[in-house]
Image (cartoon, rainbow, N blue to C red; front, top):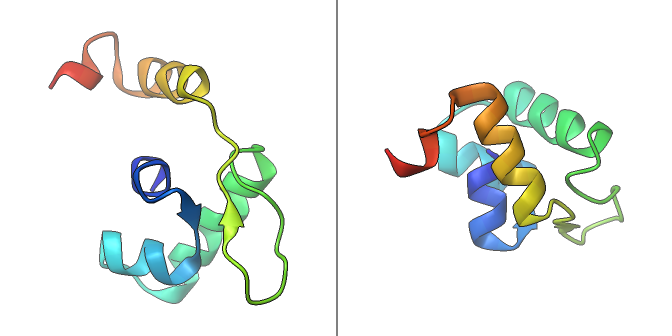
Length: 73
């Protein structure tokens, strides 16, 4: 989900649903998690949420959760 929003430059539940092929409840939980972590902006009506995660934060997240060489695979 993080990779998807970084590459698209915005975040929305429908984007997550389409990219991951998941339902509304899971996509909503992922959006809520990303907001709580400070990776995306808050809800602002019908507008897409802004992506706030930096390249450094993303790299640290990948390294922490998937290992040292995860981005190279």
